[in-house]
Amino acid sequence: MIRLRPYQEEIARAVLESVESRLGMTFSVEIARQGGKNELSAILEVVLLTLHVESGGSIVKAAPTFRPQNIISMERLKQRLEDLGYGGVWRSEMGYVIALGAARCLFLSAEGNSSVMGHTADILLEMDEAQDILREKYTREFRPMGSASNCTTVLYGTAWDDATLLEEVKQANLELQRKDGRRRHFSFDWQAVASHNDDYRRYVEAERERLGENHPLFLTQYALVPIHGGGRLLDTRQLALLQGGHPRRQRREEGKFYVAGIDLAGEELPTEEYENVRLPRRARDATAIVIAEVSAPPAEEVLPVGPQINVVELFSRTGVEHHRVYPEMVAMLKDLWDCRRVVVDATGLGEVVASFLRKPLGSRVQGLKFTPQSKSELGFNLLAAVNSGRLKVFQGDGSTEYRQLMAELEKARVHYRANQTMDFHVDPAEGHDDLLMALALAVEAARDCQTRPVRVYRRG
Image (cartoon, rainbow, N blue to C red; front, side):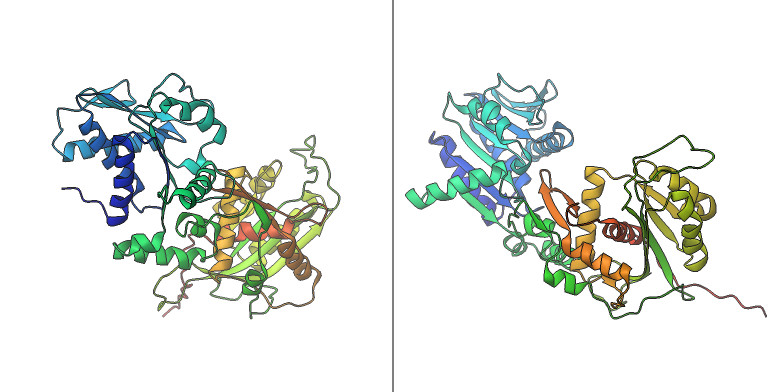
């Protein structure tokens, strides 16, 4: 017997009443990530297919992508039909329809270029992960599907920024609720879910420790608090968290584990092998390196969130061609610090520099090309390291490099985009972000590092 939790039952009762009474209501449903919104959706589909098995009709469920999101939803519905004894009764049609008697559930993609016009939703229209669906797509192609039958609509998802489709419908529903008292918006954050599931509570508490409770992903996915479209990447509290008590160092200490992040200037790279390859010179760009000491979290830590990352050295060379700074980089990474992992900005000619660095350093060097997705992940991981207190910068020493890094951190801006992604940078009018990017790459280099003490072997 499949049982819904009380908050799921509350939503299900409201939706079923609207469907069966032909009220045509539109509901917005926010449930914390992994809190059971997909299970709720599958149970509603089973119940409605059963109620309409003879009279017929269609449920339409849309998701931002057909694969994997709709595929997962289809498999869940099939399993619930099997669980309730419909094995051998339900049938699959055309690869995107699940039918029970005369009733059908259609699974459609809400991607911008998908072709969905012509379908009808006369039982229920569901929009999954509605915060990632374009408002225009919903309004023009999906919303009209239920017009002929005054179909009930449910938009499921989690918060993101204040410009999403889900947030727009949520605000409209809250206004209607204030007018007539009928509940249209349902929101259950991670604490509501955790009150029914101790394992979930422990998991989310670990995520809060790892990301920080003000991390954009924790705020939106678990606390269901929407974020604004942009602003400063780090606030004063986060900048204070970055201040470490350790000194700057000039070389490695025995038994310690070091990583590096390298952001490369957009310079020409005249070498024998690539002498005809050029990038436009940005005279004030710097090749920046951040060296960090990485250590395992304390053994007594109840919720380990990742390694401690202490920045111990900064390197910056402005307006110098790559081939001239290359020997200095090798000496620093190999001889001075013996870095175990080096992540290099491999965008453009950075890929060439990364390949050159692999000659003396081997597989320790990893190239990372900046794409909207990869840079977004770098930004979120940087915020997680800051918020959890795992990332510290050496005590201020008055050096040009230190002052430059802190200036870039203070000026860094963030812009949150659709599909839970972000971009971060320093506005060119305010300066450069070379050391900021190198810091983010150093955090990436420290990720998943297995720090082991160096073993010293003695003869005899």
